[in-house]
Length: 278
Ligand SMILES: C[S@@+](CC[C@H](N)C(=O)[O-])C[C@H]1O[C@@H](n2cnc3c(N)ncnc32)[C@H](O)[C@@H]1O
Image (cartoon, rainbow, N blue to C red; front, side, top):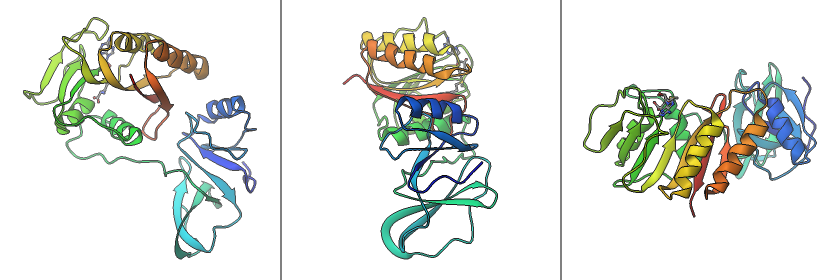
């Protein structure tokens, strides 16, 4: 543990994932070095790594005017006793890296998003979808059709129905979502399911092997069965990059474009993927 150097860039990640972020930044030739659990320092850049939640340029102190946002790496408390700034448009960050170690930054990315769970939320997974749609800057609207592969117990399906979309939920397991005329539950494997007509959106949160899931999603792309994709890919293996590279290549071979991947705040040993056919 050491203080990151001024004018270097600091990326924050899920604690325990520093080495995947270091590998990624090394591939981008950004001279990375993990500084503490949940933070990796590197050369200044405008890169958006898969394994970073947020980042900023390290500075000795915030400027005299702007807003000072309070951040903390995984497992640490928000900083307190911070300098007061004159109001201004600039954004600065004060981020706790370890007890008593606060680092300042300028030009921060958007702050990591923590979604709220209300009493009706059926599963923790629903927060992953909320965050994924927020990150994608797009979401299904009323009358759009969504297919939700690996839907049970129904957190994603519930959120999609709440947006007014029609949902075909595919999962051999039972749904806890109340019946609705906008919901069809196909209680079968997603590997056997074929839609009667193309959908606007394909969602997938199947707890299954990532390369097989990627091949299934590629089939949906090739057959033009959906226009937009939001998927959560599970990555339980120790060496994640070879799998992630193959997932991306498989999706692109299936005709998915603008494939973006990111380990979002609510993602655990998994990443969120968004893509479209155009
Ligand atoms: C993480 S849970 C999904 C949670 C769901 N998105 C929610 O919000 O409640 C993973 C699901 O994948 C399903 N699954 C695993 N293999 C599947 C397959 N071949 N076809 C369909 N669903 C599958 C499991 O039954 C399980 O319900």
